[in-house]
Structure formats: structure tokens, C-alpha cells
Image 1 (cartoon, helix red, strand yellow):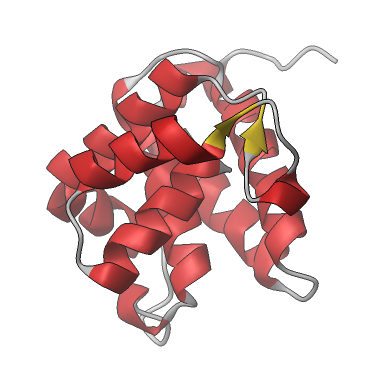
Image 2: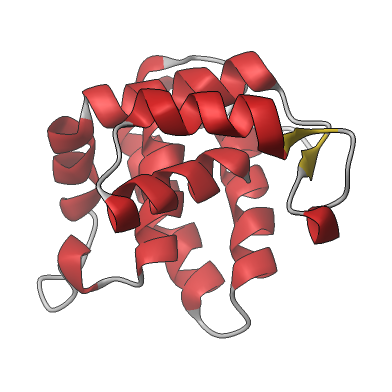
Length: 146
């Protein structure tokens, strides 16, 4: 959640990732509640890694996301929160092999449901599933156990 918020803030303000990461670590990550503007129980190192990876590799990740979008809906046309969510998920799926892709997808779908009440979570699910299968094909090759 915090990584999505930080990437959204960075895009909206034009502020670089490092000052935003610092701000979140000082003021937004902690034991408070969402209502207090905080993200309780956040994994600060993971948050920082996702935001840094998304900022450092933005063009690559945007290209990856764009490959899984319909030509009528380019990345720039997406809601900025949805764009931030897809960028955070792409950053997590792209360079990190844990947690498993299905876990990453489920976590970001929970976030999508927190922000959106319409078709956006379903849209995000389709894009995330396609990205995960492209980036971590080996995880989807083996039979899935429930």
C-alpha cells in the first residue's frame, strides 16, 4: 500500500523517490492507523526496495506494463493510482523472486479493492497475471496446489 502511495505521490509532485521514501519512513510507516495517514505493519525495507526499483527502472517497467495493455488504453490513459499500483507490482515481480507471483498478485488485488469499487481490480488482475506469467513463467509451469 505504501509503495503505491509513494509512487503516486512521486508522479503527481514530480518529486524524486529518495525524498519520498524518507518522508514515508519518518511519517507514514508505523503503528498508527490508515485513518491517521499511516500504513501500519509496513515492511520498510521492502517498501524502500519497491519504490527505488520502480523509480530506477521506470522506463523498463512501463514498457513491461504497456505490453500487457490494450492499444486503446495506453499507460498514460490509466487512472494515476492504478498506474502506481501496476508500477509497484511490476517492480516487485520483475527483479525479486519472492514472494511467489500469485502472492504478489493477491496482495496488489487487495490494494486495488481498497482504492477502487468498479472494474479496476478486475483490470489490474488481468494485467498482473499476464505480467507475472511473462516474468516468472516457471512458477506457472508447475501444477498449482491449493
